[in-house]
Length: 348
Image (cartoon, rainbow, N blue to C red; front, side):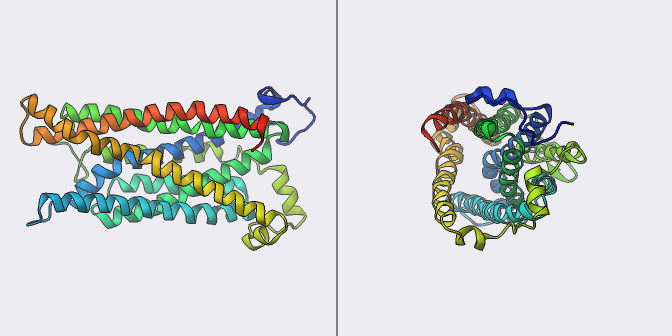
């Protein structure tokens, strides 16, 4: 393969700078996109599946009123999200250090395996607490992937093409999110048709949320593609050969003026993450809350009763939750693409 960090190509400007990338650059770009896109798919599958999962795992405690059960389900769904995000933060910090010290490729493989395996195990949860444990470990892998993928791509492509390659990497996350939305829509349609009724696998009732988490195992296949084909970036190898101290937060925040800039960047990123989860990823829950009563009225109007109403409502919630995610992420793609172009003119 061609050298990963060759700078002998003519330097174009703007989006045309992507024409300067070599086949190896594009190979690294595709692998990083797949890692990040499937990571996003796993996140979005969790967002779409957490409500039904917690509802089934919590069950119906004897003697507890329906309103109390509903409140507790919402509470534990919130807990599972919080625990997932705590794992995400720990994974982002820990695997960021590992990527600096042990290498980008090894760390990327590790994070993909972690979030894939524990997403799959979430499907076999038997209660609330093991479900939240799996979500914590999945969050660690999810949190580690993006930083390592960005570092690998940024250190591989030529500097003048870096902003546009990274912009496309971020925009590609939409494909993972939309894949999760389409899975939810399809499974919601099957649930409305009572396709899964009475279906059992390994002692577990087959439900859309369990299927979603099983699908989340697919990214593990990526590790086969990565093994032996990706090379550590020349910049990372050079820094290691020179004995540069890497993966030290004390050194990062202690150096002037970079410590100040790093802290300001951290605050900006924090605002972005809060917006992503507070607005973007909870939009699905908002849709379910707003439309559940309407779905119940529609079911009654169609002459459905008992469990048929529940299947109809659950199917519609999965279907329209997927539609909400799909539309939102279509807008996100154009937003990311557009602001990447704006950034090249106005600055970060």
